[in-house]
Image (tube, rainbow, N blue to C red; front, side, top):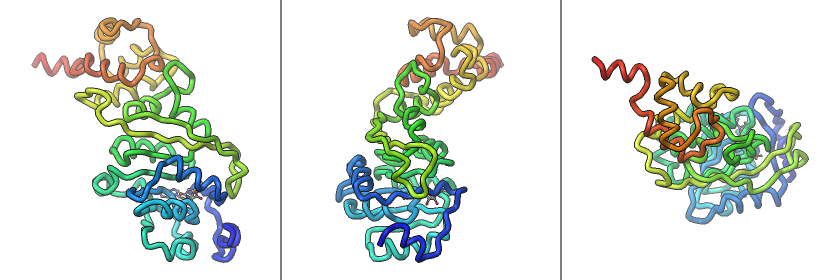
Length: 282
Ligand code: SAM
């Protein structure tokens, strides 16, 4: 039975607020599973089961698939499409509300695969990356988001989320997907991006400080890195000194530094905000 027939039969109406653009093209579903490198040893975490088309394709290759879905109206649809599959579990919950500790314990080594709802793409990715959920993350996102995730330093697409990805590992755009392959059809094209986690690629003593500095570096894109760092409380001289010691000019912008530069910068700035300095004086 076609995707449309299943939805009609179950009297399902799309919720725009949940970013529901489903896929049913067999070749595309198989291609996503292949891009993610899913094998019979894998636990797969899917976010947004929809009508279960991708879930079923993943289940055909994986050991088990755990799929989160926020929209209760999809219950009868998924009962029909996934009901007989023994290695699929659907969790009826907003993924962003799920307990992080439990997610980490269960999915740190899982493969995350999802056609992400566009309205929460960034918060979901930030959650996965910040919390170390998944050893690889293969996601369908809007093409412009894919460009940002896989950008290289220096370009207009390079920003805080790119640095976050590069601090975690490496992102590759595996395919561009035309809007015509979704139902209902969105206004933009999409792309599949695979992010591979690289353990221990940097010696980062304080990852949360590095993350904070990298985020702050892009707070005001038109400003220099030093001006952005000053907003975080670092004195100008301290910032200029740190950059100089790294062989970088005081006028450099945040988009010119790669992840390893942010790790190094955080090391050199550590404990150097005006507030830190005043505590030291006490
Ligand atoms: N995987 C299906 C497919 O490829 O056809 C559906 C993809 S659709 C783009 C995104 C799905 O995520 C929708 O079913 C939507 O209801 C669900 N969703 C949206 N926000 C969610 C959230 N915060 N937590 C879990 N699921 C969510």
